[in-house]
Length: 121
Length: 114
Image 1 (spheres, one colour):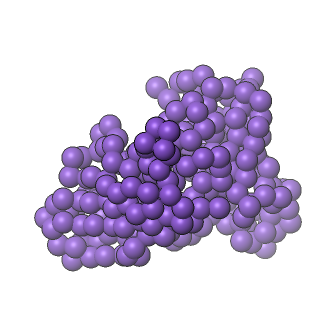
Image 2 (tube, rainbow over the protein chains, first blue to last red):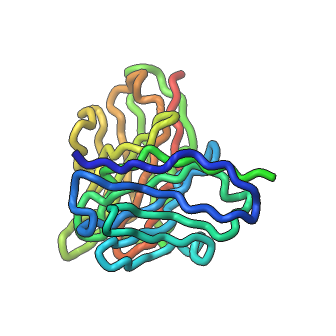
């Protein structure tokens, strides 16, 4: 059974760093891309970026390029989303999601449960 | 980058009525080499991650009730709920996955019971 299990909720201050995780199981982790999607409170879904764990090739939305880093650890089948300096506007629920096909262009058929990030002074 | 625009932003529908949500893309999502439209629809209920309903614009996902259907091609797409049920109260998103990323979601359409 395919599962994406994300790390727990985080409460941070502006300027702090953060790394959240998405542990995959039930499939060959290196054969599928993994994406990150943000959902700010009471707002819609925003596509942030995507990584191919086999070679760590990464693509970002221009809206998030330079502010977040997506990485993956093949040895633990885990994808990561990290910030070096959080802003108050980074508050939201962050989901990891897996495309349905091994090729990059596909809908998302599996989603993590989400990680809630709160940033407040 | 491709921009997705949904309409309406929200709607209230009586139980059993037909519901239509529209999604317009700033570029064609039809890939001529395979004649497929790279467009999916998701349903998101409060406190849950999104769940795919439709992919390739009109293919119903496994487990999606048959009252959900997708249509359209190129730049204009529609999600139809043939007879609204109470459990269909949710926010619905279209999603383009055409070509290399970045991809994009529509802004969402909230469906409520009248």
